[in-house]
Image 1 (spheres, helix red, strand yellow):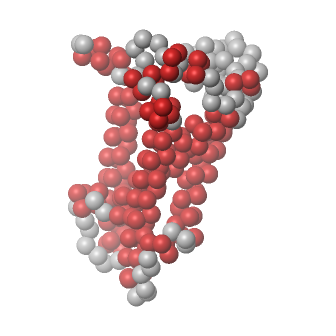
Image 2 (cartoon, rainbow, N blue to C red; image 1 turned 90 degrees about the horizontal axis):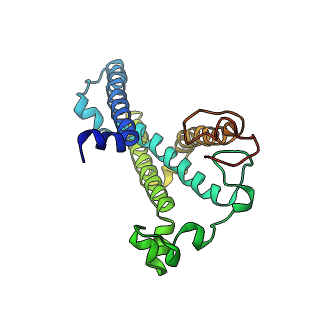
Image 3 (cartoon, helix red, strand yellow; image 1 turned 180 degrees about the vertical axis):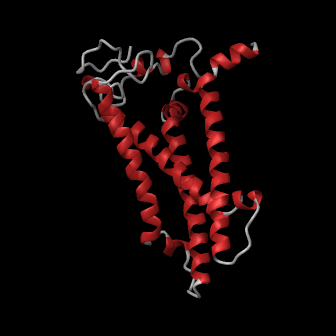
Length: 225
């Protein structure tokens, strides 16, 4: 495969990887400046960029967003198995609700040539592979959520010590309003975004995008091609 063919075949992933890394670096630079401004305001020593990106402050800011994003995907993947939005490009047709048949899912004896091995294997391997996308999203969500909770807990206890107050345990921290306010402000924005997308695709179009129905498709049609 030539470099040109590789870039063409992986353009979407490479594009988002590039803007993700650019955004992450930009966040780290801006975050370091804000952190050091607060350090100076309190008479403390500013930190280097390397020190900042390994700190709980940066980790908490990153993980707080990651966990909400992967929660959004996990909830959306699960919800769209059973729930329908008539006319939305993000929804199956009303008569297709549910996990669907082996024939339509192309598993077991219905697997075509070239199908993934676990789609043909039957038994627990096919069951696991059939839910691998949701499982991956859920595992990443819980990993990021745990990392957020640990970094936020560390920051909270640092502030407690600065005010000569007693630190709290991790279990006690994750029951506090401080943690859930940070968590839920991200969750509600993610749920709003995905719900808005599902409704907007009923009436609005973007020519050439697989996230949109064809421009001339009826509003009440659940079609994507």
